[in-house]
Length: 332
Figure 1 (tube, rainbow, N blue to C red):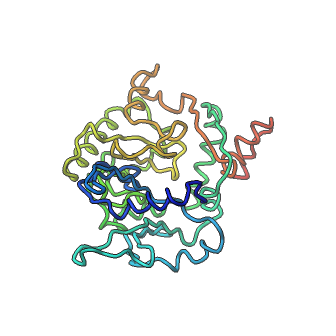
Figure 2: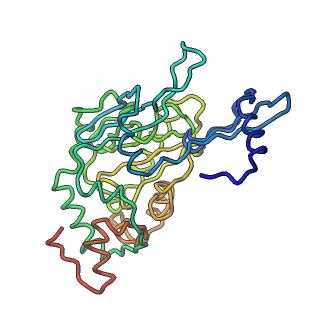
Figure 3: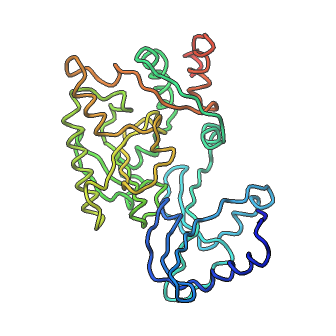
């Protein structure tokens, strides 16, 4: 980026930065990627707001990026998924060699990845769709069933059944219906409390998504909600119940019911946006106020959310419906 500042002014203000003397940290947000510092420059109060710059996107830089990383430390691995912390190279000068240099990067590795992963992480136009009860029954439920038949939930069952990631399970309740476990989300660095992001995986396998929740599940949902909140505030000092948000995704990344638990200060990106996240309290209230008996549920309401044009649901269901064609369920 080319500066338009006159050279003499640029030289003067650039010299302020190394003369900044820290007084205290004022704030840390964007999951730790931006900090606000109070200090002084030449004896006068000054604020320094630092944010990690955007990645270079040219092929030359990206092709060597993995080889420039140092101090790569694995945080966990399950099936084809692994996540790490790492430093850029060369490492910054450490003023106190007794204090470890904090990592610059949080890395997720999917290996080997599938075409579905590639589509999910590729830039693509988004579309808003409304999934009616009829569309869910005729097309979405069969599509979800097909995904489960492909073994896409093996890594989830590995955790629940105690074969992998048991060192990451930070809380567990046992029971065929009431059992669940709590573990860090792979996108959390596991140390920034304001970026807290946990996952609550239920053990029962009859609930694939929010669509399977019924009025008869309200008491169970309230029980799980209370247990998740109790466990979270008990595990992390300084976190109070009214600083924690619980939500679920629709459509979720994987169709085994799970609840996201995040700190209220975690900045709401795409995963917490309208069209993706549904607040757990709102779901409970919706179920309580539905007409009908205990079997009435979320399968009876329309849900609006966004999809990428490269997603299977757009290509195989909503794209054809928009064009007036009948989706081919056999192609799922």
